[in-house]
Image 1 (tube, rainbow, N blue to C red):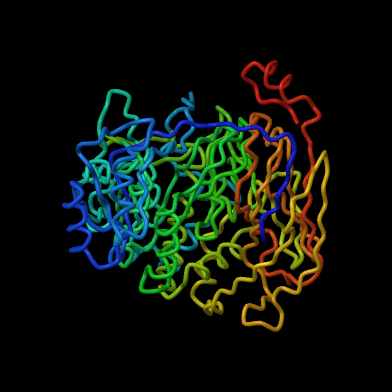
Image 2 (image 1 turned 60 degrees about the horizontal axis):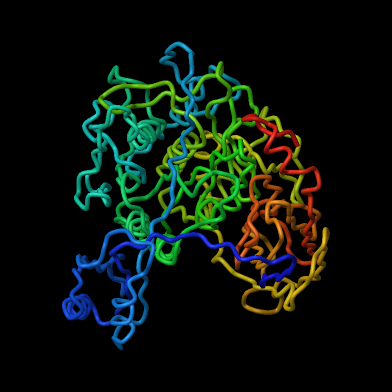
Length: 564
């Protein structure tokens, strides 16, 4: 869909960028030409960003590592080089590990309730194991703050080829230790996937015969280059990338991957796994306390990632969980203080039963996907998303927004298509036939600026490119690409209704989002119309729902979540 332009009370709001001494450049002609230009302009040549690409990483030791101002002189020198087709001085990215800082009082359980029939339904892992699938032959890498590769419950499954330290620029992803053990996140996620079975240590990973790697990329300066290199590490060796991080979950940030990280997602799905496509599994986010919406996170909101939400052992929406239309599936995690959490490996060769948040949910889904990939190694990245949709079910998940979409599937903004079932997934995977090639149909909805006060509805009769090579009869992802300005961005609810009557809330009200910047060429995504026929009337609706006095709510709730 083409940009929707709205003008109302526009004011400028500036955010300070922090510039580094790294540059990304695109130089056709190979590594020798890139090296020549680097030497000529007194840069250090740090190699290609992607294997076999024209994108290179340059660094200038004469430029300060952190500055609020771009280096105009170096920009001008690069601009004058005819062989440099594109360049960008790298800026710092704000990325947070998606863990929840909860210190429970529960006793140590040593039981993985979410996969051992202690709750009903669980993730149905025992049934998947009984058919012989344990992740053998599948490589999973955790993109995080490192992985304790010598942990006794990981060492036998550790894969050095699937690991790297982009913070320290060396092959060893061992986490940096500190008194508070803040760099434990990646090790905890890794144990959920591939903790070794039958060795008397900690618990068992769901894909306990898979190989596990770790990328240390969150414990230091984070740039677009570092993210892109992490997302594109060994794409012919690594099958699944599991990530439990993203922009600030503060209810007011709208941010996503930069140019290079977006390129990494595209290249991974187009070329990874010998053309079948790399699989990117992503935690949906922990901004529920701030009424954040994961469609304002360009990583979970991407068609190339498989976004995973959380539910508690009681089938309730966790207090930290974000809702959005791009969530595809759900696995278990923690709830309130007296509810159980996730058992896994911990740093310093320890174990923990205190892994929490959507950070804990995404690796469980990555591990189940590894079982399905063992059952059918020929699955493409889109096949896997189809399988996830069909292997998720409402179960006992409680939410007030469950609806039946146009093809009869129940779907929720909190849970996607429901709780993931490992046994259903491996059984479907064994007999799955590859979907047809992806088609994209682009439709201009609004081409001239519109003005909105409190409500705007736009209807468009869509043929879905019928009669052209891009004709679509069965939907997967729907994206609404919107540009708007508004006096208070967080007051807007934007929704999209399909011809078959399925309403997707593209972004809900965010009381803490007081930005006047609006949305600039932002692609909102929904999976709620999966398999529907797109032909017919689509309705895009924008509504101001901030009339309940956001400021009063935020001021007087005194640390408690404001009621809706």
